[in-house]
Length: 598
Image (cartoon, rainbow, N blue to C red):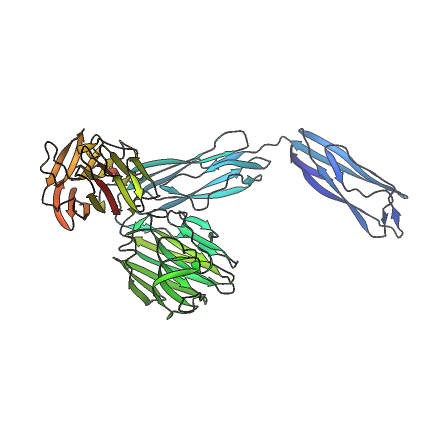
C-alpha cells in the first residue's frame, strides 16, 4: 500500500482490509505492526475469529518527521499462514506559504458618490495547513463586506477570493493595505490598495451583493441576495451602508423575498440617524424586525401581528420602537401577500415626506417629522418563535449627495473644552478662557459642499463666538484647535471658517456679526467678508446655511436670509468641524441639527 508523497509534520491515514476467503472460520493468532513513521490503530487482538467471507480492517497512518522514502510491513497471522502488506511512502519537507495574488489592486479613478469592487486571492501555496494570525481589513474609503477571519485555517491549495469596495469621499489619491500575516514565518504579506477620487454629481449606492455593506447579526450574502435571517427562531440581522447620505431626494428600489418558514416576523429598509448610531447597528428580534431600538425611520414589511399591529400582512413607516413593539407614523394592510412570491418596492423621500410603492402601486405617503436629514442606509430583519428567510435582492439606491455624520459616534474628535451633550455639541460652557473644537475625520471635497446647522450662543456675559471650520485636509488633523478669545478656536489653523462673533475685538466691524475668515493669529482674524446685517446672535437659536457654489463662491445665510456672497479659495479637500472660544467674557456655544452634504 503506497501512501504517495506526504509532507513532514503531517499525517495521512489509509485502511487495510484482511478478508477470510476460505470456507471455515479463521482465528487470528497475532498481528505484526509496522515501525515508525507508520503506525496502526485498533489492530484485531489475538483470538479474533473471522468468519468466511468476512473481513477485519486496520487503519494505518503515515506521519513522517524527516524527508525521504519509508517502507514498512503490516502482517496478520492465523492457522493457515500469514498475510502481509508492504507499506511505502515518500516524505517531503512540509511548509505552509501564504500567497496573495496580485500583490496590489488599483481601483483607478472613481467619482465621489460611486463605488467599485475588486477581488484579490488569498491562498496557501504550501503543502501543509496554515493559520492566519492577522487579517486586518483596510479603513474607509475602502470597505469589506465579508472579511477573511483571523485564525482561519487554509489547507494546501485552498483559495479565498477577497472582495474590497472603494467608495471615495474626497478628491485625489488614496492608498491603504489589507494586512495579512500567517504562521508560515514569512512575516506580513499585505495587499496594497490604491484608488483616486474624482468629482462626482450624485450618489449611487451599490447593492449589498456588490460589496461594501457592513453585515451584522445573522445577515449574509448568498449569491446576489442579501439574506437578513434564515428560517431559524430568534434571529436578527442587518446590513448597513457605512457612508451617510442626505435623505432629501433619496430614491431606493429593491425586491423583497420572504418565506420558507412558519411566518414571522418581517424586514425593513431603514434610514438610521448617524448622530446616534454606527454601521454596526442591530436592533431587536421578533417584532423588532432587527430595527427596534435603533434611532431613525424604517419602512417595515411585517408578516406577523404583534400587539398594536393592524394585521399579519402590512407595510408601515416606523419611527422607533422597543422590544417587539414598533411605533408607526402610518401603516397599510392593502398590500399583496408579502410571503407569497417576490415583491418590488420603491421608496422615495422628498423633504420629510416618505412615499412607498409595492408592485408598482403607491401604498403609503406620509410626512415624518422625525426623519433625520442624513442617514445610514440599512436593511434589517428579524424572526421570533415563528420564522422565515428574509431576503432582499436587486437594490438600486441613489441620493443627492453623501453626507458627513453629525457630531456623535462616527469619526469626530473633540478637542479642548468641546463635548457632546445628548445630540448637541457644546464647544464651550459659559466659563472664561476656554477653547474647544470638534473635527470630523473624513476629508471631503469642498466643491458642492452644503452645510446647515443651528447655533446657540447664550448663557454668559457675551463673548466671543464660534465658527464652522473648513480646514485644509492636507495640512492639519482632527486634533486641530486654534487660538482662544477672538481667535474663536480657528486662528492659526489652515483653511477657511464661517464665524459668528459676539465681541468686538480690534478690527471687528461690531459686536454682532457674521464673517468668512481666511486665517489669523492670536485673537485677530483676517476676513474675506463680513456682515452686520444679522439677527442678535445671542438671542435665541439661529439656523446657518453655508453653500459652496459651482463658481467657487461661498454663500452664507442666517435664518434663511443671505448675508454673505464672496469668492474665496477653498482647499480641494477639507476637514469639516466647529470651534468656539471665550475670553474674559463668556457664553455657552452650542451646535445642533448639523447637516453637511458633499
